[in-house]
Length: 373
Image (tube, rainbow, N blue to C red; front, side):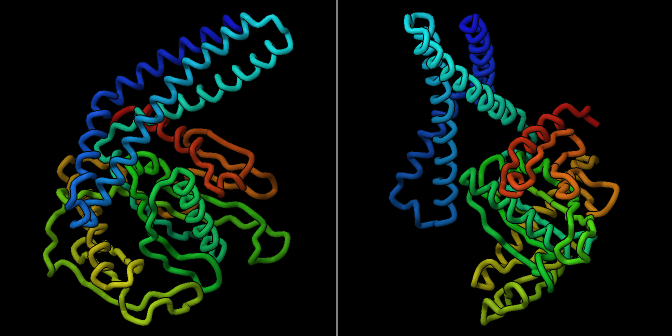
């Protein structure tokens, strides 16, 4: 009976896998790998380091995606072989052991297939782009600044677990603890599609390590996610429309980490949009990075106006009561719950350590199920 049940589930997995392959277009993916491999092998590739990095990163992602699809297909074949071994095994103990192995592999494939199926839902205009994420401390004083830093670490750990390149572009430290704000880039295909569901107000409830003993504290932080535009998307920004301020980069507590005024803050005067960068040691590099992010934000505004509808890519996030998307409760009980999808876990430590895929996948499915405005 177990074999029959397994066979039915494998058939369902193969059907789902066929749908995924059709959406991904494996033949086109293979052609893409060949094309990028040729570009990566060009002798003058590194004459333009930025372009070379883009080619090698795209190649690595395409190869990994193709390898994952091939691996799943092979694992499905191997699982069917395991089931045949169970049915043909005369030794009951060995048959039971093999059945347990097959059941574990089936569960693993079902989880992996579910994740892949979610990725096929990322078909928005900006979903394939890298993402620029800004975290800002909201209401809650020192606890909010500390919470903002906890969220920064959470997203950096998530990216690290997925081997996504990350660049912290700007960090503004709070006086007592934590951060006022931080901006970082996740330079991976579909980073925006995945992380865009994280945009909104996040709420933390805990026993404050900064206040009176035994008193619970609620604090908030805002997460903004925008897609990073390609160079071909860039819009012209007249010099008269921006104000550029330079200042000295600093670390926690105001400690100087740079002896020159290399950090850059660009203000777009017509819209009031402000972008700061201090990651690079060169003022020129920081200015270029800040200008690119500013162009991304302004292009979104322009396209929203042209389309006459709000895409809510960044959104108006107030970081206070009333518009939170997720609660992180550390006292009097342990729980992290997304208020849109109802997805919840009872281990906040794992979540703060980067275990976000369950929330992200649930968010993508929830967004896809919403009626189109």
